[in-house]
Image (cartoon, rainbow, N blue to C red; front, top):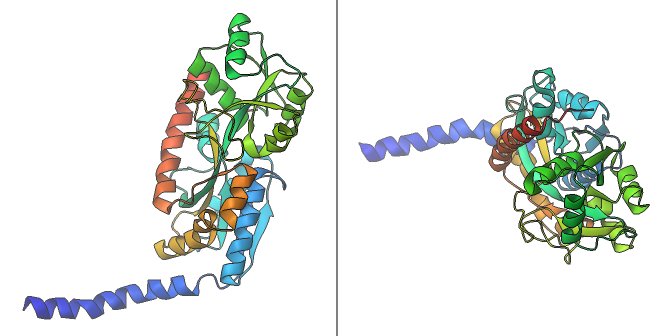
Length: 324
């Protein structure tokens, strides 16, 4: 009796799973829209275009990147939340996905934990503490000595309130017990330029944004975030090595879709837009640019989103950070 029951169940299970399998094998059948909530040229845009090109090559279907910049990334992110849950609209996001809930609270027009399907984390961009090459600080210890000698006076550049560079600065103050004079600029490039010109002696930057200037001697790298040294800046110690493991700011670039995308389509999208980040030639290319590879599962990215929202909400509340 038991054997006959099991044998009878096999065709039923196959019949139940056949439609899902067929949908996954047929997907995508038309152009997939990939929304980037920023103007062209930044790290999120670069990541999206690399992965979209790979997905198009593998699938034979166009993955069209659409830039929707402005509004602290909120309008572009909302466009993903309100799209049809069929897998044909994706978003490539950075740290703002998990910091905006703490910065804007109920003003966000979507619920970050409810209104999206996580597809997977692609890469991460650790941050580097920069010093002016004309300044006297040649190490993180030098920076600490200066910051503690002049509490509240040492100028520190960032890319605007609520940005990753700004939150890294706030995190450093809390972790090291410092008071810095934070100076906001309209983006990472002008902030880095100010440090290079010694208008402001220190600042934070994502590694890909500063790598060329560090290698060219225009900026001095003092320490990097992350659990291990960056392959792009192998001679620069991590904050963990220097006694500050709390300094873990990094911009995670991940792919999301509207909530309710069928599980088999999520799996297919992960294989097209995420998993390839860990393979040749894409992985080495991204590492050379200063990114660390993640290529996570959808489940791991969803868990990361929840953890990061809670972490950054706590820091933003503790430090009283306000958005621009």
